[in-house]
Length: 429
Image 1 (cartoon, rainbow, N blue to C red):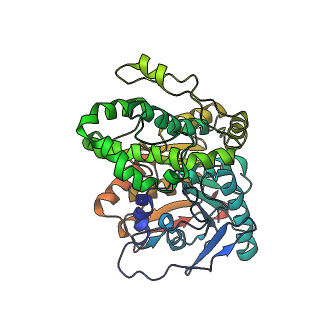
Image 2: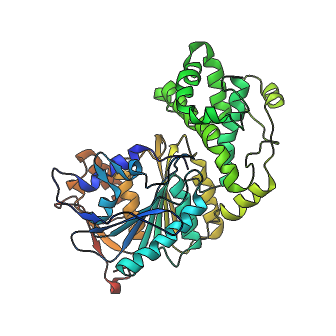
């Protein structure tokens, strides 16, 4: 939902380790879809395995120009398209046709992108959708609704459990902030002045952050963090709880108006919410501002943004336990849906990571999730060359996960590679 953490992109360097590696793919010039979404296709310079990986990017702030978010695509000089191309996959991604809340638009734009790829490169044997943050819920919805297009998906750190819950997470943080820090953010909490929206980063750093970190307001900060359920790292409490506050408040100030316009009405509601965790919960609940969502927004969220766990294709999900932007509880809620639908474990597997941070994964964790997705779909029989791009410690961590999961792998090899199953072997190409 919120912009993907830069660390997710940066750690993808594991696919390209080693100095001065030869070019593994060529990206065609960006082009424009009928919706206005900008798209990019990259093809491997080596053998093309006939399959496609589509990348669904994360959230971009409302008001930013439409464009492929390069900071999400690339990190430390390496790009996600290279991870696909080095393994022999074709690669495609796009910008979506709007910024801000773009789940419905992104889902449609990615479907159109697959059609464009087919027209330009021929129909792929299998198409895999990989997304993070906002791209995570796009991936989950797409796997549920478009099983004829996507063979499997990997959804990382997305709001896949309950979309109104995600909106309310940000809204509750803003509503209760006003109780503990009245007047620190000027104006209507849910209809901020355009000047504040345009200058939010500077205002936050100059005014809000000093309040949060001031020793004299430590009790208010601690109470608010408990009430708003802001995740933190106990070994680095102040820095991480402040980071959680910054992310939650940013959505409410900068992006909630766009969400209202996109959903057809104001989406946040707390009329019956009971807040706990303060020194005086009775006073808190009597004082906090109460709001109702517009009916049109509720209908839109239920009909267009709701997952059901009805999967006919494999969906692997990956999430940190203390994600400050999209709470981990989304995974519990989605797993309950797939349990009721009879798809838990058979088609849905959640991989949890005990760490603070949004999309804050290590190379071995990302590699494991990606390989699990391919194995669930029966495409590959083995991964090799793990030691060519992971550090020894990361390779050991991957080996432990792979051994526990029964995944065939080889540390040895000049580069990362996957062995594809033959059509007669029960898998893909």
